[in-house]
Image (cartoon, rainbow, N blue to C red; front, side, top):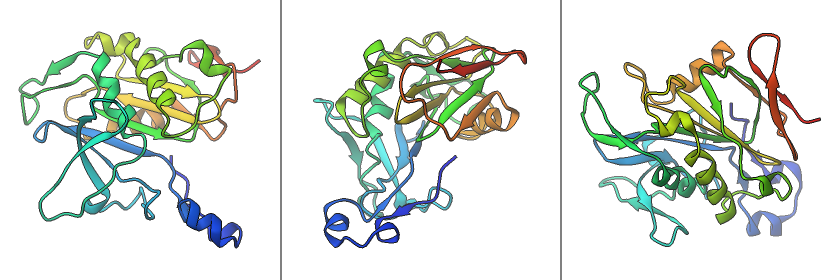
Length: 242
């Protein structure tokens, strides 16, 4: 799902550029709610230092109990014996989307019967989705302006758009809805995917199993404007940009 990091120095020798922005570019982020901590555990920002998403250490994870009251940042809980970690720039959208959605109480099939957000894990990456199985996955469109005026990473507009889209997701508003995964696509940017709490699974497992099975077909191409999904012959919904 994630590409390798792009280092500025590998592309061009312009010291002032590397000094002005990150020396490398870290592709996407992900996080999952931890019932024991009552917080989201998410990947660290890639703008401060290289973060290999395929080989994370504990010092590359941040504990996020929520968003700041003004919505302009994420609250980060310090962890004894660990370095202070700044979370990914998408941390605000990851935790604030839960404000518009219900919470559920985990049953006895879980290690903890805690009250948790209906969304368990979240995945953000600069990819698109070519097709999905509507029986198992829900596509939630953004508000119309986002298809005409693309937004970029770490902006309030991006967080608001994602929060509003997932707030309308029927599969998330109704915890008993059989669809366990929902996603939205930001034109010119990428995809945000969330999963619900599926017993006897690990964090992010439902998302990756749906990808493996073709229920959620991720593509390198990211739509650049107006888009929709139309029925395909195999029963899935397929991307249409015409």
